[in-house]
Length: 164
Image (cartoon, rainbow, N blue to C red; front, side, top):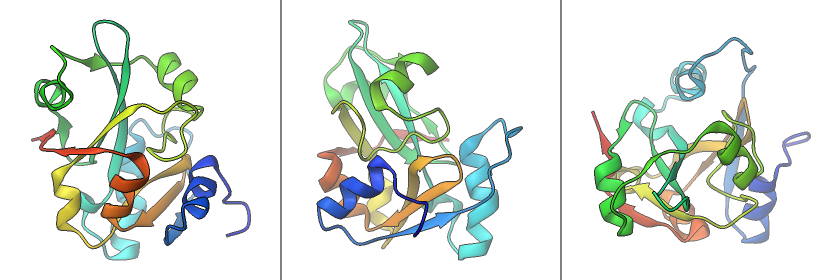
């Protein structure tokens, strides 16, 4: 795992979580980082695209930020997310807010090891899989772990936040 140390991998090691690191050559011209991860890893690793999760940062009307973790092929139901955390509504945070709060660059935002602890919700579909992949804190770096460990280390709520 030389060259794969990130705040996410460091946090997982500190918590004693077993995980694997998968890397791929990130295309700087890629427009959808999640789709790129699915294209690069699903066939190579023999995993379903629904096992590869994206991390989105959302903002409440009062400016409070939160984290949504859901399968790449799905969209975030902002209405369901807001209800899950007890807020009136949420919108997507802008890039600068997300990067400043998490300490990661867009396309490499991991739900683990963020600069600030944010309320996190993991889509319930994660628990249907023995392992899920999510960003490891850098574009082209994914961590592969037990979804229950992901929920535990992020102190996440679990909810039906993904929609087609």
